[in-house]
Image (cartoon, rainbow, N blue to C red; front, side, top):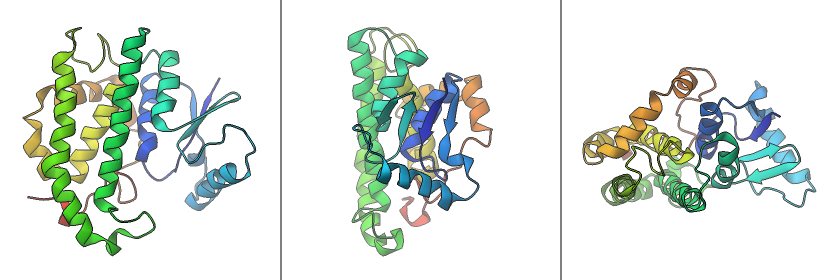
Length: 243
């Protein structure tokens, strides 16, 4: 059965971690909104689905996934649902739950990334909150990025399975998400990220290993991978790239 992923067609955003899992596992899936050449039509499709759906399990917002009659929203929960089906998580309860815990932390991190360019309100343009963004970004670069990367590095150090992965002895969806974080940081904050990478060698090793996976490498070099841009979670603005 083909999975149907609903997410905005012009950004990687919060849906990209789901795309990475589907691509790694070579699953059959339809990135539904990307079937439209017109972005406005794609957005209308998602909006109308949310506004006109009487399903008791109605999603609040994308990303959401449809698997037959099952609808799952929120990227972390989608991955929690998909991972056992795609062999992207251990079958041991403690490791499966720990993977979910890590993914929820990834969600927190992505929210903080978003708040660097929208610290006041989502309803305002970035240009309307530049000065506040500069202040938020200084703290994010100096304190929050190191705090999160240290957490992931510590998990890798403490992994009692003695593997190069975050959970257990094999790659899980959390490793794919960590790769996405590093890719995004390199795009949005290249100067700061370059300075930090040597402090977290295990994190960078995971990112490099994920990139070298044939299925992931093929995806990254295909038109299915949406380029980073100034509409997604990770955005590059020169004035926020602290030196």
